[in-house]
Image: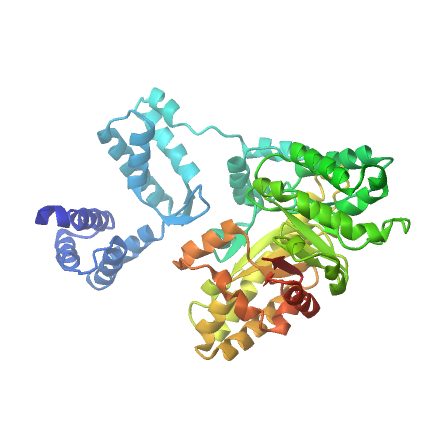
Length: 538
Protein backbone atom coordinates (compact mmCIF):
# COMPACT_ATOMS: atom_id res chain seq x y z
CA UNK A 1 0.00 0.00 0.00
CA UNK A 2 1.38 3.41 -0.96
CA UNK A 3 1.94 6.32 1.44
CA UNK A 4 -1.02 8.21 -0.02
CA UNK A 5 -3.38 5.28 0.69
CA UNK A 6 -2.16 5.11 4.32
CA UNK A 7 -2.84 8.82 4.82
CA UNK A 8 -6.16 8.84 2.99
CA UNK A 9 -8.36 8.59 6.18
CA UNK A 10 -6.58 11.47 7.94
CA UNK A 11 -6.59 13.57 4.76
CA UNK A 12 -10.33 13.07 4.46
CA UNK A 13 -10.87 14.00 8.13
CA UNK A 14 -8.69 17.10 7.84
CA UNK A 15 -10.53 18.23 4.72
CA UNK A 16 -13.85 17.78 6.52
CA UNK A 17 -12.63 19.77 9.53
CA UNK A 18 -11.31 22.53 7.26
CA UNK A 19 -14.79 22.92 5.72
CA UNK A 20 -16.36 23.06 9.18
CA UNK A 21 -13.90 25.78 10.22
CA UNK A 22 -14.91 27.81 7.16
CA UNK A 23 -18.59 27.30 8.05
CA UNK A 24 -17.81 28.47 11.60
CA UNK A 25 -16.55 31.79 10.14
CA UNK A 26 -12.76 31.28 10.16
CA UNK A 27 -10.64 33.22 7.67
CA UNK A 28 -8.22 31.53 5.25
CA UNK A 29 -5.15 32.19 7.44
CA UNK A 30 -6.77 30.53 10.49
CA UNK A 31 -7.90 27.52 8.47
CA UNK A 32 -4.40 27.06 7.04
CA UNK A 33 -2.89 27.26 10.53
CA UNK A 34 -5.36 24.68 11.90
CA UNK A 35 -4.85 22.28 9.00
CA UNK A 36 -1.05 22.45 9.40
CA UNK A 37 -1.22 21.73 13.15
CA UNK A 38 -3.73 18.86 13.08
CA UNK A 39 -2.01 17.20 10.11
CA UNK A 40 1.04 16.67 12.34
CA UNK A 41 -0.97 14.90 15.07
CA UNK A 42 0.16 11.33 15.89
CA UNK A 43 -3.31 10.24 17.02
CA UNK A 44 -5.31 10.45 13.80
CA UNK A 45 -8.76 9.65 15.20
CA UNK A 46 -11.37 12.18 14.11
CA UNK A 47 -12.37 12.79 17.73
CA UNK A 48 -8.81 13.76 18.66
CA UNK A 49 -8.42 16.00 15.61
CA UNK A 50 -11.66 17.84 16.45
CA UNK A 51 -10.56 18.34 20.05
CA UNK A 52 -7.22 19.75 18.89
CA UNK A 53 -9.03 22.02 16.39
CA UNK A 54 -11.24 23.47 19.11
CA UNK A 55 -8.19 24.15 21.31
CA UNK A 56 -6.48 25.98 18.43
CA UNK A 57 -9.56 28.03 17.53
CA UNK A 58 -10.01 29.07 21.16
CA UNK A 59 -6.71 30.94 20.80
CA UNK A 60 -6.79 31.95 17.12
CA UNK A 61 -10.47 32.94 16.78
CA UNK A 62 -12.60 32.64 19.99
CA UNK A 63 -15.83 33.64 18.24
CA UNK A 64 -15.41 30.95 15.57
CA UNK A 65 -14.48 28.50 18.33
CA UNK A 66 -17.91 28.98 19.93
CA UNK A 67 -19.66 28.26 16.65
CA UNK A 68 -17.41 25.26 15.97
CA UNK A 69 -18.10 23.89 19.46
CA UNK A 70 -21.85 24.08 18.80
CA UNK A 71 -21.31 21.89 15.73
CA UNK A 72 -19.68 19.21 17.92
CA UNK A 73 -22.59 19.26 20.36
CA UNK A 74 -25.02 18.16 17.65
CA UNK A 75 -26.09 14.68 18.73
CA UNK A 76 -28.38 12.13 17.07
CA UNK A 77 -30.76 9.77 18.89
CA UNK A 78 -30.48 6.59 16.82
CA UNK A 79 -33.04 3.84 16.24
CA UNK A 80 -30.78 1.53 18.30
CA UNK A 81 -31.49 3.65 21.40
CA UNK A 82 -28.04 5.22 21.49
CA UNK A 83 -26.69 8.76 21.16
CA UNK A 84 -24.09 9.47 18.47
CA UNK A 85 -22.43 12.56 17.01
CA UNK A 86 -24.13 13.90 13.90
CA UNK A 87 -22.38 12.88 10.68
CA UNK A 88 -23.78 13.92 7.34
CA UNK A 89 -21.91 10.99 5.82
CA UNK A 90 -24.60 8.76 7.29
CA UNK A 91 -27.23 10.62 5.25
CA UNK A 92 -25.23 10.17 2.06
CA UNK A 93 -24.60 6.48 2.73
CA UNK A 94 -28.26 5.71 3.53
CA UNK A 95 -29.47 7.55 0.39
CA UNK A 96 -27.05 5.61 -1.81
CA UNK A 97 -27.97 2.33 -0.12
CA UNK A 98 -31.77 2.72 -0.12
CA UNK A 99 -32.41 4.65 -3.33
CA UNK A 100 -31.02 5.01 -6.86
CA UNK A 101 -30.18 8.71 -6.41
CA UNK A 102 -26.80 9.86 -7.79
CA UNK A 103 -23.89 10.49 -5.44
CA UNK A 104 -23.81 14.16 -6.40
CA UNK A 105 -27.44 14.68 -5.33
CA UNK A 106 -26.91 12.64 -2.15
CA UNK A 107 -23.91 14.76 -1.15
CA UNK A 108 -25.72 18.01 -1.94
CA UNK A 109 -28.75 17.00 0.17
CA UNK A 110 -26.53 15.76 3.00
CA UNK A 111 -24.73 19.11 3.10
CA UNK A 112 -27.95 21.17 2.99
CA UNK A 113 -29.64 19.11 5.72
CA UNK A 114 -26.55 19.54 7.91
CA UNK A 115 -26.67 23.31 7.36
CA UNK A 116 -30.35 23.42 8.27
CA UNK A 117 -29.77 21.46 11.49
CA UNK A 118 -26.97 23.89 12.44
CA UNK A 119 -29.29 26.84 11.80
CA UNK A 120 -31.90 25.31 14.11
CA UNK A 121 -29.36 25.27 16.97
CA UNK A 122 -30.77 22.12 18.61
CA UNK A 123 -28.61 19.80 20.71
CA UNK A 124 -30.48 16.56 19.92
CA UNK A 125 -32.19 15.28 16.80
CA UNK A 126 -33.60 11.85 15.97
CA UNK A 127 -32.85 9.80 12.87
CA UNK A 128 -36.58 9.92 12.09
CA UNK A 129 -36.54 13.74 11.93
CA UNK A 130 -33.38 13.71 9.79
CA UNK A 131 -35.11 11.36 7.35
CA UNK A 132 -38.09 13.74 7.15
CA UNK A 133 -35.76 16.67 6.38
CA UNK A 134 -34.06 14.63 3.64
CA UNK A 135 -37.45 13.76 2.13
CA UNK A 136 -38.38 17.46 2.00
CA UNK A 137 -35.14 18.17 0.11
CA UNK A 138 -35.85 15.33 -2.32
CA UNK A 139 -39.26 16.87 -3.08
CA UNK A 140 -37.71 20.33 -3.49
CA UNK A 141 -35.41 18.94 -6.19
CA UNK A 142 -38.27 17.15 -7.96
CA UNK A 143 -37.28 13.60 -6.92
CA UNK A 144 -40.76 12.47 -5.87
CA UNK A 145 -40.08 8.89 -6.96
CA UNK A 146 -36.85 8.80 -4.90
CA UNK A 147 -38.73 10.19 -1.92
CA UNK A 148 -41.08 7.18 -2.21
CA UNK A 149 -38.06 4.88 -1.90
CA UNK A 150 -36.70 6.77 1.12
CA UNK A 151 -40.01 7.43 2.90
CA UNK A 152 -40.51 6.22 6.46
CA UNK A 153 -43.79 4.40 7.04
CA UNK A 154 -45.19 5.20 10.46
CA UNK A 155 -48.20 6.47 12.36
CA UNK A 156 -48.98 9.85 13.95
CA UNK A 157 -48.38 10.06 17.70
CA UNK A 158 -52.06 10.97 18.27
CA UNK A 159 -53.27 7.79 16.53
CA UNK A 160 -50.85 5.55 18.45
CA UNK A 161 -51.89 7.12 21.75
CA UNK A 162 -55.57 6.56 21.00
CA UNK A 163 -55.09 2.93 19.93
CA UNK A 164 -53.04 1.98 22.98
CA UNK A 165 -55.94 2.69 25.34
CA UNK A 166 -57.65 -0.47 24.09
CA UNK A 167 -54.81 -2.71 22.91
CA UNK A 168 -51.03 -3.06 23.45
CA UNK A 169 -50.38 -4.47 19.98
CA UNK A 170 -48.12 -2.27 17.87
CA UNK A 171 -44.67 -2.90 16.39
CA UNK A 172 -41.73 -2.69 18.82
CA UNK A 173 -39.97 -0.04 16.74
CA UNK A 174 -43.02 2.23 16.62
CA UNK A 175 -43.69 1.85 20.35
CA UNK A 176 -40.05 2.42 21.32
CA UNK A 177 -40.00 5.67 19.41
CA UNK A 178 -43.43 6.67 20.74
CA UNK A 179 -42.38 6.07 24.36
CA UNK A 180 -39.12 8.01 23.98
CA UNK A 181 -40.81 10.84 22.11
CA UNK A 182 -44.14 11.19 23.90
CA UNK A 183 -44.20 9.27 27.20
CA UNK A 184 -40.81 9.19 28.92
CA UNK A 185 -39.53 12.61 30.04
CA UNK A 186 -36.64 13.69 27.83
CA UNK A 187 -34.08 13.90 30.64
CA UNK A 188 -34.80 10.29 31.63
CA UNK A 189 -34.78 9.14 28.02
CA UNK A 190 -31.34 10.68 27.60
CA UNK A 191 -30.10 8.88 30.73
CA UNK A 192 -31.21 5.62 29.10
CA UNK A 193 -29.60 6.55 25.78
CA UNK A 194 -26.34 7.46 27.56
CA UNK A 195 -26.48 4.09 29.38
CA UNK A 196 -26.50 5.64 32.84
CA UNK A 197 -29.72 3.75 33.51
CA UNK A 198 -31.49 1.03 31.53
CA UNK A 199 -35.24 0.81 30.89
CA UNK A 200 -35.99 -2.82 30.09
CA UNK A 201 -38.59 -3.47 27.37
CA UNK A 202 -38.79 0.23 26.57
CA UNK A 203 -41.16 -0.59 23.71
CA UNK A 204 -43.70 -1.77 26.33
CA UNK A 205 -43.16 1.04 28.83
CA UNK A 206 -46.65 2.48 28.37
CA UNK A 207 -48.49 -0.75 27.52
CA UNK A 208 -47.36 -3.77 29.57
CA UNK A 209 -45.88 -4.81 32.91
CA UNK A 210 -42.61 -6.71 32.51
CA UNK A 211 -43.29 -9.91 34.47
CA UNK A 212 -46.37 -11.82 35.63
CA UNK A 213 -46.98 -15.23 37.17
CA UNK A 214 -50.08 -17.38 37.12
CA UNK A 215 -51.11 -19.29 40.26
CA UNK A 216 -52.30 -22.74 39.24
CA UNK A 217 -55.67 -23.74 40.67
CA UNK A 218 -57.31 -27.21 40.69
CA UNK A 219 -60.59 -27.52 38.74
CA UNK A 220 -63.18 -30.31 38.32
CA UNK A 221 -60.83 -32.89 36.84
CA UNK A 222 -57.30 -33.31 35.51
CA UNK A 223 -58.00 -32.20 31.93
CA UNK A 224 -59.90 -29.13 33.04
CA UNK A 225 -57.16 -28.25 35.54
CA UNK A 226 -54.48 -28.48 32.87
CA UNK A 227 -56.23 -26.68 30.04
CA UNK A 228 -58.06 -23.96 31.99
CA UNK A 229 -54.78 -22.91 33.66
CA UNK A 230 -52.85 -22.99 30.39
CA UNK A 231 -55.59 -20.99 28.66
CA UNK A 232 -55.31 -18.37 31.36
CA UNK A 233 -51.52 -18.27 30.96
CA UNK A 234 -51.94 -17.88 27.20
CA UNK A 235 -54.20 -14.84 27.69
CA UNK A 236 -51.81 -13.22 30.18
CA UNK A 237 -48.85 -13.90 27.87
CA UNK A 238 -50.19 -11.26 25.44
CA UNK A 239 -50.23 -8.61 28.16
CA UNK A 240 -46.71 -8.92 29.57
CA UNK A 241 -43.24 -8.14 28.19
CA UNK A 242 -41.50 -11.34 29.29
CA UNK A 243 -42.83 -14.92 29.06
CA UNK A 244 -45.52 -15.72 31.63
CA UNK A 245 -44.41 -17.77 34.65
CA UNK A 246 -46.28 -20.51 36.53
CA UNK A 247 -46.59 -21.20 40.25
CA UNK A 248 -47.28 -24.55 42.01
CA UNK A 249 -48.27 -26.40 38.84
CA UNK A 250 -47.63 -29.81 40.43
CA UNK A 251 -49.73 -29.04 43.53
CA UNK A 252 -52.79 -28.18 41.43
CA UNK A 253 -52.52 -31.54 39.61
CA UNK A 254 -52.11 -33.69 42.74
CA UNK A 255 -55.82 -34.19 43.61
CA UNK A 256 -56.30 -35.97 40.24
CA UNK A 257 -53.13 -38.07 40.08
CA UNK A 258 -54.47 -41.22 41.73
CA UNK A 259 -56.42 -42.34 38.65
CA UNK A 260 -53.75 -41.65 36.03
CA UNK A 261 -50.65 -41.78 38.20
CA UNK A 262 -48.03 -39.09 38.70
CA UNK A 263 -45.98 -39.86 35.60
CA UNK A 264 -48.90 -39.97 33.16
CA UNK A 265 -50.45 -36.83 34.64
CA UNK A 266 -47.15 -35.00 34.31
CA UNK A 267 -46.64 -36.20 30.74
CA UNK A 268 -50.10 -34.97 29.77
CA UNK A 269 -49.45 -31.59 31.34
CA UNK A 270 -46.08 -31.13 29.65
CA UNK A 271 -47.40 -32.08 26.22
CA UNK A 272 -50.17 -29.52 26.65
CA UNK A 273 -47.69 -26.93 27.96
CA UNK A 274 -45.39 -27.33 24.95
CA UNK A 275 -48.30 -27.11 22.52
CA UNK A 276 -49.45 -23.82 24.06
CA UNK A 277 -45.91 -22.35 24.38
CA UNK A 278 -43.93 -23.97 21.52
CA UNK A 279 -41.50 -21.13 20.71
CA UNK A 280 -38.08 -20.47 22.18
CA UNK A 281 -38.00 -17.13 24.01
CA UNK A 282 -35.21 -14.57 24.53
CA UNK A 283 -35.96 -14.41 28.26
CA UNK A 284 -36.28 -17.56 30.37
CA UNK A 285 -39.74 -18.66 31.47
CA UNK A 286 -40.05 -20.39 34.84
CA UNK A 287 -42.39 -23.32 35.37
CA UNK A 288 -42.92 -23.28 39.12
CA UNK A 289 -43.35 -26.47 41.15
CA UNK A 290 -43.41 -26.77 44.95
CA UNK A 291 -42.09 -29.06 47.69
CA UNK A 292 -44.85 -27.78 49.98
CA UNK A 293 -48.55 -26.94 49.78
CA UNK A 294 -49.12 -23.16 49.53
CA UNK A 295 -51.65 -21.67 51.96
CA UNK A 296 -54.31 -21.07 49.32
CA UNK A 297 -54.82 -24.82 48.70
CA UNK A 298 -57.11 -27.12 50.68
CA UNK A 299 -55.58 -29.28 53.40
CA UNK A 300 -56.95 -32.39 51.69
CA UNK A 301 -53.96 -32.74 49.36
CA UNK A 302 -51.90 -35.80 50.22
CA UNK A 303 -48.52 -34.41 51.21
CA UNK A 304 -46.71 -37.72 50.79
CA UNK A 305 -47.30 -37.39 47.01
CA UNK A 306 -45.52 -34.04 46.72
CA UNK A 307 -41.95 -35.36 46.46
CA UNK A 308 -43.09 -37.90 43.88
CA UNK A 309 -44.80 -35.21 41.80
CA UNK A 310 -41.68 -33.01 41.90
CA UNK A 311 -39.52 -35.95 40.86
CA UNK A 312 -41.91 -36.73 38.03
CA UNK A 313 -41.76 -33.15 36.74
CA UNK A 314 -37.96 -33.05 36.94
CA UNK A 315 -37.65 -36.35 35.09
CA UNK A 316 -39.93 -35.32 32.24
CA UNK A 317 -38.97 -31.68 31.68
CA UNK A 318 -35.65 -31.99 29.83
CA UNK A 319 -37.46 -31.19 26.59
CA UNK A 320 -38.43 -27.80 28.06
CA UNK A 321 -34.86 -26.58 27.49
CA UNK A 322 -35.59 -26.18 23.78
CA UNK A 323 -38.22 -23.53 24.56
CA UNK A 324 -36.02 -21.80 27.18
CA UNK A 325 -38.18 -22.85 30.12
CA UNK A 326 -36.62 -23.60 33.50
CA UNK A 327 -38.00 -25.40 36.53
CA UNK A 328 -38.29 -23.25 39.62
CA UNK A 329 -38.57 -25.49 42.69
CA UNK A 330 -40.01 -23.69 45.70
CA UNK A 331 -39.11 -25.06 49.14
CA UNK A 332 -40.20 -23.78 52.57
CA UNK A 333 -37.57 -25.72 54.52
CA UNK A 334 -34.04 -26.78 53.61
CA UNK A 335 -34.72 -30.26 54.97
CA UNK A 336 -37.27 -31.07 52.26
CA UNK A 337 -34.42 -31.21 49.76
CA UNK A 338 -33.57 -34.57 51.36
CA UNK A 339 -36.74 -35.97 49.76
CA UNK A 340 -35.03 -35.71 46.36
CA UNK A 341 -31.96 -37.56 45.15
CA UNK A 342 -28.82 -35.92 43.75
CA UNK A 343 -29.73 -36.49 40.09
CA UNK A 344 -33.17 -34.93 40.50
CA UNK A 345 -31.66 -31.65 41.66
CA UNK A 346 -29.50 -31.11 38.58
CA UNK A 347 -30.13 -28.01 36.44
CA UNK A 348 -33.10 -26.61 38.38
CA UNK A 349 -33.42 -23.35 40.31
CA UNK A 350 -34.39 -23.47 43.98
CA UNK A 351 -36.72 -20.69 45.13
CA UNK A 352 -36.20 -19.81 48.78
CA UNK A 353 -39.57 -19.73 50.59
CA UNK A 354 -38.17 -20.18 54.12
CA UNK A 355 -39.36 -16.72 55.18
CA UNK A 356 -42.27 -16.13 52.76
CA UNK A 357 -43.73 -17.66 49.62
CA UNK A 358 -41.89 -16.48 46.52
CA UNK A 359 -42.01 -17.31 42.84
CA UNK A 360 -39.34 -16.91 40.16
CA UNK A 361 -40.43 -14.17 37.75
CA UNK A 362 -38.07 -14.82 34.82
CA UNK A 363 -35.16 -15.22 37.24
CA UNK A 364 -36.21 -12.60 39.83
CA UNK A 365 -37.65 -13.92 43.11
CA UNK A 366 -40.73 -12.00 44.23
CA UNK A 367 -44.05 -12.46 46.01
CA UNK A 368 -45.70 -9.96 43.65
CA UNK A 369 -45.75 -9.31 39.91
CA UNK A 370 -43.24 -6.83 38.46
CA UNK A 371 -44.38 -3.65 36.75
CA UNK A 372 -41.01 -2.30 35.59
CA UNK A 373 -37.43 -3.48 35.29
CA UNK A 374 -34.57 -0.97 35.38
CA UNK A 375 -30.79 -1.17 35.40
CA UNK A 376 -28.20 1.11 36.99
CA UNK A 377 -24.69 1.44 35.56
CA UNK A 378 -22.63 1.66 38.75
CA UNK A 379 -19.39 1.30 36.83
CA UNK A 380 -20.07 4.47 34.84
CA UNK A 381 -21.16 6.37 37.96
CA UNK A 382 -17.77 5.54 39.50
CA UNK A 383 -15.84 6.88 36.50
CA UNK A 384 -14.28 9.79 38.44
CA UNK A 385 -13.11 7.48 41.23
CA UNK A 386 -14.45 9.88 43.87
CA UNK A 387 -16.94 8.65 46.48
CA UNK A 388 -18.90 11.90 46.80
CA UNK A 389 -19.54 12.27 43.06
CA UNK A 390 -20.40 8.54 42.84
CA UNK A 391 -23.18 8.76 45.42
CA UNK A 392 -24.37 12.07 43.98
CA UNK A 393 -24.71 10.47 40.54
CA UNK A 394 -26.34 7.39 42.02
CA UNK A 395 -28.87 9.63 43.76
CA UNK A 396 -29.78 11.21 40.40
CA UNK A 397 -30.12 7.81 38.73
CA UNK A 398 -32.29 6.35 41.48
CA UNK A 399 -34.52 9.43 41.58
CA UNK A 400 -35.07 9.01 37.83
CA UNK A 401 -35.97 5.34 38.31
CA UNK A 402 -38.45 6.12 41.09
CA UNK A 403 -40.19 8.68 38.89
CA UNK A 404 -40.19 6.33 35.88
CA UNK A 405 -41.64 3.57 38.06
CA UNK A 406 -44.52 5.78 39.21
CA UNK A 407 -45.10 7.09 35.69
CA UNK A 408 -45.36 3.57 34.25
CA UNK A 409 -47.78 2.46 36.96
CA UNK A 410 -49.98 5.52 36.49
CA UNK A 411 -50.22 4.86 32.75
CA UNK A 412 -50.91 1.12 33.09
CA UNK A 413 -53.67 1.76 35.63
CA UNK A 414 -55.63 3.46 32.81
CA UNK A 415 -55.29 0.62 30.29
CA UNK A 416 -58.71 -0.95 29.68
CA UNK A 417 -57.31 -4.28 28.48
CA UNK A 418 -55.38 -4.69 31.77
CA UNK A 419 -58.42 -3.79 33.88
CA UNK A 420 -60.45 -6.40 32.00
CA UNK A 421 -58.00 -9.13 33.08
CA UNK A 422 -57.71 -7.81 36.68
CA UNK A 423 -54.06 -6.85 36.24
CA UNK A 424 -53.44 -4.09 38.76
CA UNK A 425 -50.15 -2.20 38.40
CA UNK A 426 -50.73 -0.51 41.76
CA UNK A 427 -50.07 -3.79 43.62
CA UNK A 428 -46.88 -4.63 41.71
CA UNK A 429 -43.23 -4.19 42.59
CA UNK A 430 -40.38 -2.95 40.38
CA UNK A 431 -36.93 -4.43 40.01
CA UNK A 432 -33.62 -2.58 39.80
CA UNK A 433 -30.63 -4.54 38.49
CA UNK A 434 -27.17 -3.39 39.57
CA UNK A 435 -24.32 -3.55 37.06
CA UNK A 436 -20.66 -3.33 38.04
CA UNK A 437 -21.09 -3.24 41.84
CA UNK A 438 -17.69 -4.73 42.68
CA UNK A 439 -16.02 -2.94 39.77
CA UNK A 440 -17.24 0.44 41.06
CA UNK A 441 -16.22 -0.45 44.63
CA UNK A 442 -12.70 -1.38 43.51
CA UNK A 443 -12.45 1.78 41.38
CA UNK A 444 -13.28 4.04 44.31
CA UNK A 445 -11.52 2.27 47.19
CA UNK A 446 -8.34 1.35 45.29
CA UNK A 447 -7.72 -1.00 48.20
CA UNK A 448 -8.07 -4.61 49.30
CA UNK A 449 -10.91 -6.98 48.53
CA UNK A 450 -12.17 -6.38 52.08
CA UNK A 451 -12.32 -2.60 51.46
CA UNK A 452 -14.15 -3.17 48.16
CA UNK A 453 -16.74 -5.47 49.75
CA UNK A 454 -17.26 -2.97 52.57
CA UNK A 455 -17.89 -0.19 50.03
CA UNK A 456 -20.19 -2.48 48.02
CA UNK A 457 -22.23 -3.07 51.21
CA UNK A 458 -22.46 0.68 51.72
CA UNK A 459 -23.61 1.11 48.11
CA UNK A 460 -26.32 -1.56 48.36
CA UNK A 461 -27.57 -0.05 51.65
CA UNK A 462 -27.72 3.39 50.01
CA UNK A 463 -29.64 2.04 47.00
CA UNK A 464 -32.10 0.05 49.14
CA UNK A 465 -32.80 3.08 51.31
CA UNK A 466 -33.24 5.43 48.32
CA UNK A 467 -35.63 3.08 46.50
CA UNK A 468 -37.75 1.91 49.44
CA UNK A 469 -39.97 -1.16 49.84
CA UNK A 470 -41.55 -1.01 46.40
CA UNK A 471 -38.41 -2.32 44.68
CA UNK A 472 -36.55 -5.60 44.40
CA UNK A 473 -32.79 -4.95 44.22
CA UNK A 474 -30.90 -7.59 42.25
CA UNK A 475 -27.84 -8.16 40.11
CA UNK A 476 -28.46 -7.16 36.51
CA UNK A 477 -29.08 -10.33 34.48
CA UNK A 478 -30.90 -8.75 31.56
CA UNK A 479 -28.78 -9.48 28.46
CA UNK A 480 -29.79 -6.31 26.61
CA UNK A 481 -29.01 -4.16 29.63
CA UNK A 482 -25.62 -5.79 30.15
CA UNK A 483 -24.77 -5.39 26.47
CA UNK A 484 -25.64 -1.68 26.50
CA UNK A 485 -23.64 -1.00 29.65
CA UNK A 486 -20.66 -3.01 28.44
CA UNK A 487 -20.62 -1.08 25.17
CA UNK A 488 -20.83 2.25 27.03
CA UNK A 489 -18.06 1.29 29.45
CA UNK A 490 -15.89 -0.10 26.63
CA UNK A 491 -15.68 -3.32 28.58
CA UNK A 492 -15.69 -6.85 27.19
CA UNK A 493 -15.79 -8.81 30.44
CA UNK A 494 -19.06 -9.65 32.19
CA UNK A 495 -19.64 -7.66 35.39
CA UNK A 496 -21.44 -10.67 36.85
CA UNK A 497 -18.07 -12.39 37.39
CA UNK A 498 -17.97 -10.46 40.67
CA UNK A 499 -20.76 -12.69 42.07
CA UNK A 500 -18.33 -14.86 44.08
CA UNK A 501 -17.07 -11.77 45.94
CA UNK A 502 -20.54 -10.39 46.63
CA UNK A 503 -21.70 -13.73 48.08
CA UNK A 504 -19.05 -13.35 50.80
CA UNK A 505 -21.14 -10.56 52.33
CA UNK A 506 -24.21 -11.54 54.37
CA UNK A 507 -25.29 -7.89 54.37
CA UNK A 508 -25.40 -7.76 50.57
CA UNK A 509 -27.11 -11.13 50.19
CA UNK A 510 -29.94 -9.99 52.49
CA UNK A 511 -30.54 -6.65 50.77
CA UNK A 512 -29.81 -7.65 47.18
CA UNK A 513 -30.74 -10.69 45.11
CA UNK A 514 -27.65 -12.56 43.96
CA UNK A 515 -28.15 -15.84 42.18
CA UNK A 516 -25.95 -18.41 43.93
CA UNK A 517 -24.64 -21.60 42.34
CA UNK A 518 -24.65 -24.93 44.19
CA UNK A 519 -23.21 -28.34 43.30
CA UNK A 520 -24.95 -30.44 45.98
CA UNK A 521 -27.72 -30.45 48.59
CA UNK A 522 -25.39 -29.43 51.40
CA UNK A 523 -24.19 -26.36 49.52
CA UNK A 524 -27.77 -25.51 48.45
CA UNK A 525 -29.04 -25.79 52.05
CA UNK A 526 -26.27 -23.48 53.23
CA UNK A 527 -27.20 -20.82 50.64
CA UNK A 528 -30.91 -21.06 51.48
CA UNK A 529 -30.16 -20.66 55.17
CA UNK A 530 -28.13 -17.52 54.42
CA UNK A 531 -31.18 -15.98 52.78
CA UNK A 532 -30.17 -16.32 49.11
CA UNK A 533 -33.45 -16.12 47.18
CA UNK A 534 -32.49 -18.16 44.10
CA UNK A 535 -30.03 -21.05 44.10
CA UNK A 536 -29.13 -22.58 40.75
CA UNK A 537 -28.15 -26.24 40.89
CA UNK A 538 -25.24 -27.25 38.66
